[in-house]
Length: 122
Image (cartoon, rainbow, N blue to C red; front, side, top):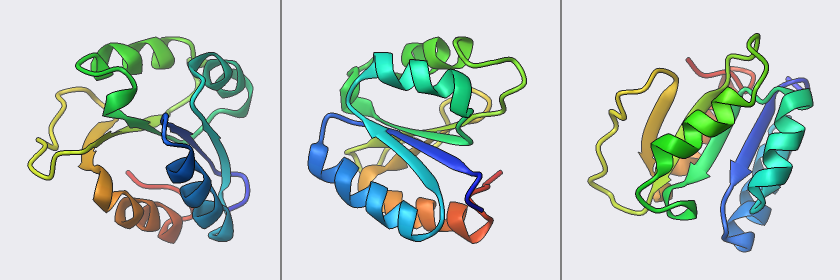
């Protein structure tokens, strides 16, 4: 499980700290940042299995951000994305392969699903 990597992209430092520690306690390697440049730099070599992105990081442009990140990943990488929404009634269907939209307050439940499967959720 230690070879599985999860990235978190959010401007909320407390969220990043808390969820990084929780995921690490479950055996995942975690890279948490509020800096897109650093995420892109490390994602090229570390090959994250999941990237969780706060929708408020780039309001109304989440899909474009996912495309930018995905385009900068090696072609062999099958990274999945979770867009974290502050709205409970957010639509889960983003109409993009490998992308899910989830209510931010339910993120821990989704992360637990990932760790149950060795940090691997499909």
